[in-house]
Length: 183
Image 1 (cartoon, rainbow, N blue to C red):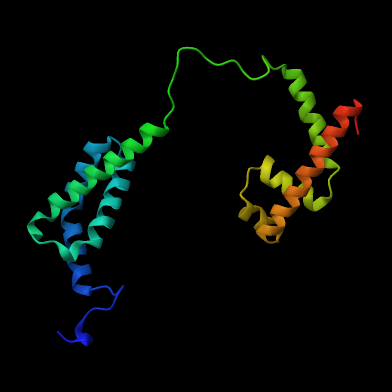
Image 2: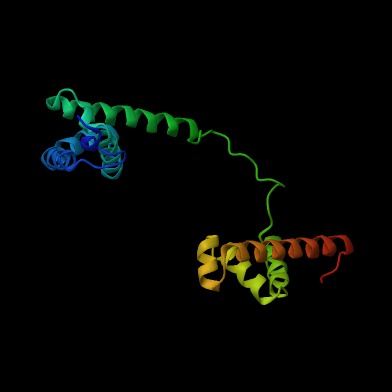
């Protein structure tokens, strides 16, 4: 085989892709059933099958026994599902019989409302761009990119305006708490 007939790195073999597509079209329903049995959820089953097929595609051309392709994909699904389960097991919540007490004891709803009103009054004193950045980021819970798009500026500008605004609010709150009077 000459160097000119070798496939280039990253090149897609068309026959390889067609064979894989044909096989997936013929076997996807059976594999989806297997994924559903593993996960118990149709949405997770689709995700699991998609992940398994993506991994199988990468090694499709190296399969020694094409008739074993379905068993190979099933094995990938089982291994992937086990990985998902282990990951979820490490990060899931552990329910307890006793509920923890809130920090600072029971919060007074009237005091919380007064604090929110006080903070909103301080937010309204911010310059327009800083106020817009804070409102969109923290009150509307938008990402930096979404905020930048709405404000017509860069993400860096959103970050700097938000940082300056929060620093200004913290300074004013600290000054207010030390003097005991409203600014």
